[in-house]
Image 1 (spheres, rainbow, N blue to C red):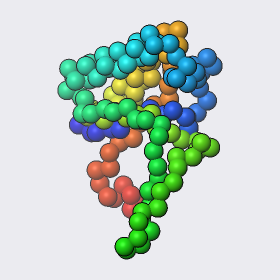
Image 2 (cartoon, rainbow, N blue to C red; image 1 turned 180 degrees about the horizontal axis):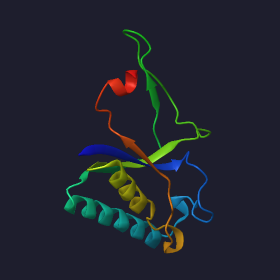
Image 3 (cartoon, helix red, strand yellow; image 1 turned 180 degrees about the vertical axis):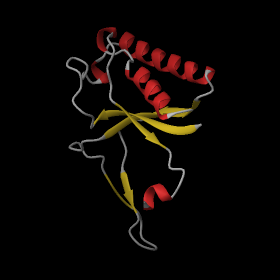
Image 4 (cartoon, one colour; image 1 turned 30 degrees about the horizontal axis):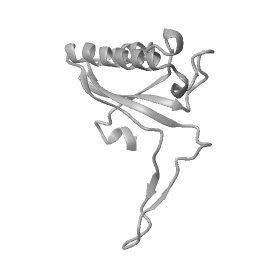
Length: 137
C-alpha cells in the first residue's frame, strides 16, 4: 500500500471545464449541501475499501510564515490575491497502486457543482515521499 495526497484547488489548476468554474460562494445552499454530501460518500466508499486515511477542507484565508533568525519573530505574509495556487482541501488515501490513486482522484473530480453537474475538477495526486533517494536522485 502507498499513501497519496489528493489536493483540491480553489485555483491554480489547468483550464477548467467551461461552466464549472463558478466560485462556491456563488452556489445555492442546496448545491453546497449536495457537494458536501458527495464528498462524505467518497470518504465512506474509501473507508469501506480500507483506503481512507484523512481529509480536511481548508479556508481560503492563511499566511506564509518564514524563519527570520534566532530570537526574531517569524515573518508572515499572504496569501496573495494574485497567487496562482490556493488549496481548497486535501484527502490522504492508502491504496495498492498509482492507477488506483488515479481512479480515486477521478471519482473525487466528479463532485457535483452548480446545477448538480460534475465539476470535472483537476485533482493533484502526490505520493508520500518514502525514500530520501527520491529527492537526492
